Length: 356
Image (cartoon, rainbow, N blue to C red; front, side, top):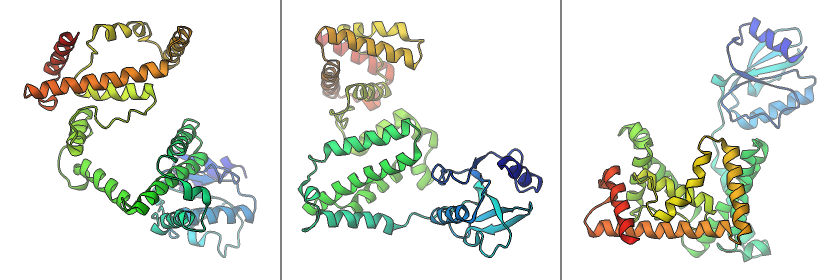
């Protein structure tokens, strides 16, 4: 039977609705099957016991053993079963199976799985462990941390879920590595890392975990930035932005934070002029904008200018200038959080005129 004939049998036997969205996998697609995704999926056709055993083992590693599953036999009969009993004692040949999204029971992530990785890290760092791992410190690991994050991003861009799983493991290992280094110094442990991020996420989403507040208010970008700034007790709006970020990303984050306060113009005349050429690409797609930026890089390089360093220098200058603006407001007993966007932008423009 073909996969479509098997699908028709499930529909005809009312095990599956014609309107239901599902993914069909072949017997050799076990590596590409996204088990964690909330979807109904059909595996068909299955040709032999080896493939059935392979799929059963995989299902048992992902789902609870009492997860419901529907099997199709070679004679067109549908058997209702659970993963634990998948093909156990069946005298009839199984040619396909169906697992519905509503029946999914993912296994709860077990603490010992994380603990095993923590133990590996501990053993690598102890006397008699790996010489390279024992030599590392927070600074020496910076490049590796950045590389692992970029490799995970690359897997996301390629929609390569198998590789993403591996790369996220590498990123997690870096987190555990740094936590281990900190624990050896008596600074903090991986337990404290987990506890702190859990506390922070619950505090930032009180409408979910405490049933307080309006969800729309909490997902509002401006409100989010104000809460985060208050929580971190940051004096300046742009405090906390890592200056080591790639320049384009740094520029985007700076602009996002400043615009969340209500300021949408650079105000300094020389800065404003820098943005004029971009207006020609307002209606262009991402590719055209990318081409525009690429061309600007070429022009700047021909003039002996390093675009990355120049943009980074400007971003740092802007951050310092904006912090001076906030200091000026504080001297006047004013606060960004209490000013309307219109009043704030007017104050920003006046500050820049005064500084010119």
